[in-house]
Length: 146
Image (cartoon, rainbow, N blue to C red; front, side):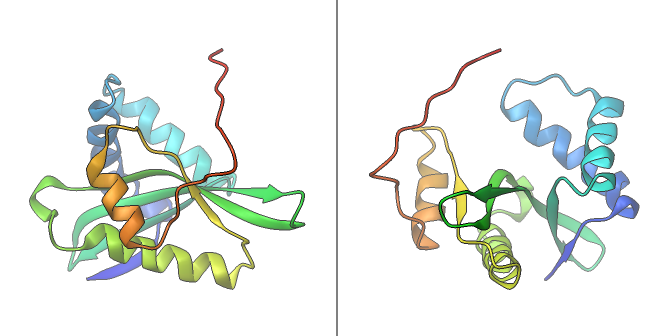
């Protein structure tokens, strides 16, 4: 397996997987809008998207948004989306994506990786805990739907 950073040339492979991920959360497919969304994030360098391949087959992706910590005066990265194709699960793809992401974040002087997951998503909880993520005991997250 190889993990690479996505570029515009990967959009045709990434978009269908991104759509399947969105559908898990009840979103409509919106194929063109999804592709445009990904292209814009890459063009504007607003996201880091890591792709896991086995030969020419895309197995999974991790989409991260760089942000900043004012207290640390350093960048921090927010893991927004992680998805592994159903037929590729149980092959430690997500762990490999997280490992590659952590290495890349360290090399970019990021102070931390951050992720929010649904409270009922026990699989994701086990994944992040096994990768040494710690549940935040100091801060609560609040959301204002707009």
